[in-house]
Image 1 (spheres, helix red, strand yellow):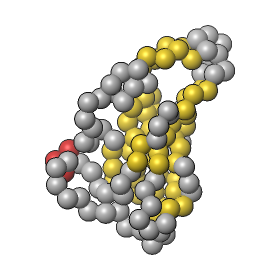
Image 2 (cartoon, helix red, strand yellow):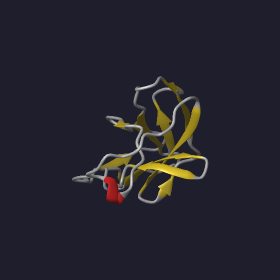
Image 3 (spheres, one colour):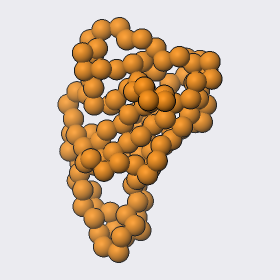
Length: 125
């Protein structure tokens, strides 16, 4: 499983598009829930957690898929990070924006508690 961003660098005011890619590297078919109810996207800068897709998620859904041996699938539609700090208590209020100016951020993802193999890094200008 890999975390993906659509670019390595984003201009001021440009929002990162985040997605996930799954590969079945086993010799047998694998069925799992890959819906938003099982997904978690986390954006960090250093040890500072800036955003979690689950903090303000509404109407999570399930989606069972079967991956054949060697098959790779990617998110059908990316998630957009609005460059703000999230928390469960901030969903209905104004949230602070992440600093740009060349700051580096990292995306990690998990599905069903299984973490991605590393992070995708990107820069905010």
